[in-house]
Length: 162
Image (cartoon, rainbow, N blue to C red; front, side):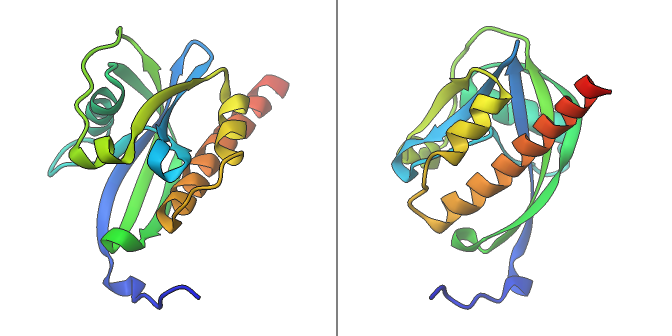
C-alpha cells in the first residue's frame, strides 16, 4: 500500500523536456542506478524562458547544443520524493553542435545518468517500455516521457499519412 499524500500541498515546479533529434536518432538519458530511461531536461530557473532553460538543461546533461523547435505537449506529475507538482512541457529539438563538456549535478552523477542514442522514435519508445524502474519516481518519469514520445510518434505518423 502506498503512502497517503496530501497532493494539494505539493509545490509547483516548472520544467522542460526535449525529444532531441540527431538526424533520425533520439537522445535518451539512462538513469542506470534506478533502471529507466528518460528525456533530457529539467527545471526552469527564475524568470528563465522555456526554450533557454531547455537548451541549458540539454547542454548540461548531454553536452550538446540544440535548437528548440515545436512544443509536443504538457504533463503534470506529482513527484512524492520532493513533494513537487511538476509541470513538464516537452519540445522537439535538433542537435546543432558537437559534443562538449557535461555539467551534471551531484544527484545526476549519483543516479548514473548516461547518454544513450536510440535509432529512431520507435526504438526510443521500445527501449523505455522494456525496462522496469526500481522506484516510484522512475515509474512516473517513465510513463510521462513515454507518453510524450508516443504522442509525437503518432503525430509524425499522421503527417506522413496525410
